[in-house]
Length: 546
Image (cartoon, rainbow, N blue to C red; front, side, top):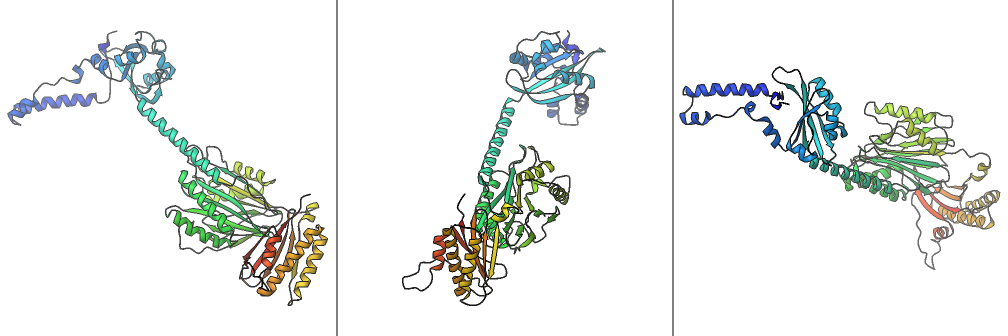
């Protein structure tokens, strides 16, 4: 084949022709004395035009791989020296499927068809060839000169192996970083949720897809003692290891602050200050709630977090109202606590924005969809958790991480009704209230059929706590006994907000031994301030198994 009859009609040919015409005009002007003679001599040095260059010699010397094919079956017309070095000699005149099998292997032949039909160049980036190197292929249509009616394609392959390997190393690094963040995130979340006596709880965490780095979503369940339970869910803004690390610090702090048994809004005030110390540029949302089975409600506070949803026993879904303060780490805001009913038979859901937030819809629409899904979801907390995630369309490629926690307050009926009991006595009068409290406790514990040893320990704990309240507290005073399937709880409330503390009584002291005795005989004890003033002092005994 006469290779000189082929020329690539590449963009810029007319521009180069115009440039040559401009050069001729410039030479004419120079001859007329438009510029100094010295410069005229320099500018009139003949420069060969591009069309006059030996094309084959140029293509043979370029480091890129070049091949020329023609006709509908892409018969090979030419390959340059670089192509031969990469893939060996190739027979001209043969169809590309036989002459250039490497192009067939990487799927380039359909692209040649497209270029031949459309007359437009096409490029495919970073294809790995059989020689193990990566190339970017540009296929440009060419036409046969001198009136010929044929057509062909010029294949130009640039070696981009270094770029491809660098990109792969970057992707591998990003994968390792994401795996590290996911591992850190999961290790900082509770491996097993605590199991309160009066609640059934399940939680799920799903990291975002491979294109979205893991975030800082977290949840926790903290038993406070005395039958009360703290429930926490939060979301650290940002992605990657940093967000996961901040999340771990906040979760640890929440568990420490929860031991103080403070109201939810005071817990958030402490967390707000800590978040600013950790990183002034890092903010987080958080909802902290406390469940007391004696009150039948969730007392909660929210720092910029999404509202808690509760489905009551009749199937009606309630959305927690304000107060909602700004996220943690903003500072200067006084949080407040609110409440939402959570009686027997109710189910509550705490969640992060990944469950309900979508780029193409309003956030309220996502929350409304979650309410509808919760209204129709029944079963165990884990079943409900899975149903809510599926109904929200969360998949492995989701663009944000998701945390969901579902809790149920079962309605104890039948045999369970005998395992969950409450009894209360108002402590009226003076010192005579103590013997009445002991008699009341003895009768209740006997009716609950506790073993003699546990009965006696319970009566002793009642005696000491009531005596302590009569001596140091103020009215109104109340004794409450409560049993679950796992423990006996004794609680005494009064109107004084000074919390008792355990101390060592000297041999000559006439008081100061009551709390020490309670701490010795009970499995656990504690004290907290109650809303509206006053305090509650409690202790609990683990029931014998069997």
